[in-house]
Length: 160
Image 1 (cartoon, rainbow, N blue to C red):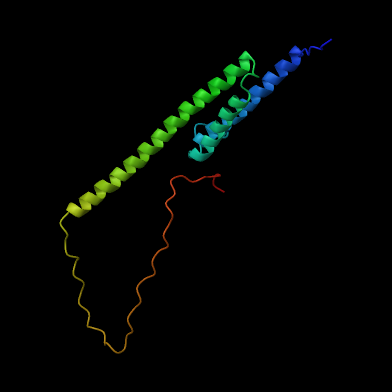
Image 2 (image 1 turned 90 degrees about the horizontal axis):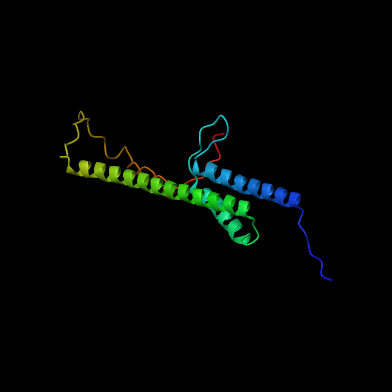
């Protein structure tokens, strides 16, 4: 005779609570990475899109891996969390892109104004007697500053 496994209702409730805590923990970390919330008594950190995307992806993966194994409450918990976080993430990316576009536009306008302004000769410096050619060696050109890699977003672990 086959045995039927009956799941204890208390165990199922406990599993639902643990599932909710896991989803909440990942969601909280995503919101922190997006700069939407801050640790108690601190200012929200600058957004870290890479970390935020990773946390949202974790929830999407959890949703896919538990498909068909969740009860109705668990299903609602994860679907709501994923939808809300994805919407916030898209808004954040759009806002970041708009800020980058605004900065680029301002730099371009400044460059256009500088190019359009009539060039004025530099103010004349008082003339100094020429240095004797034999006594002074030519000065070497100043060293070039190191080129920096262009980084769009940087991780920040707080000031410390």
